[in-house]
Length: 160
Image (cartoon, one colour):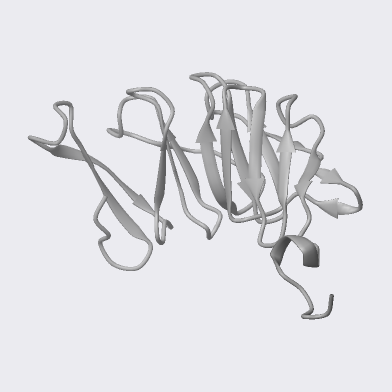
């Protein structure tokens, strides 16, 4: 998806592993785009500015979708279940990315936040925070802090 000026992206498509490319849609309002493939034909294109677009035809055409905020990271756990880590929160789609539901993502007095997420199947996921890790084993319904950055974990004082 090469950029065509500020906020405009022209989508190119391939059906043979990248040997040949055809034109797809042109999307406006997408700076620094990211793509989450959901199935071979279903795609979610988003930018950190908050724009999100969904395609069911491999990128020939897109419709605007509302995920609920600025997307930091997004991952399809299955063709039906897609998770999005937002700048302020967490969202889940149960219809492959067409519609989204904001989820409570709070544990031990802190909001679940970070820079990346990784789901292993539909239930088990991890969010990589800047100073801690968050884990869910029930599809994001509840969260636990996996590692705290205590001195004994990341180094500390030189005193013994």
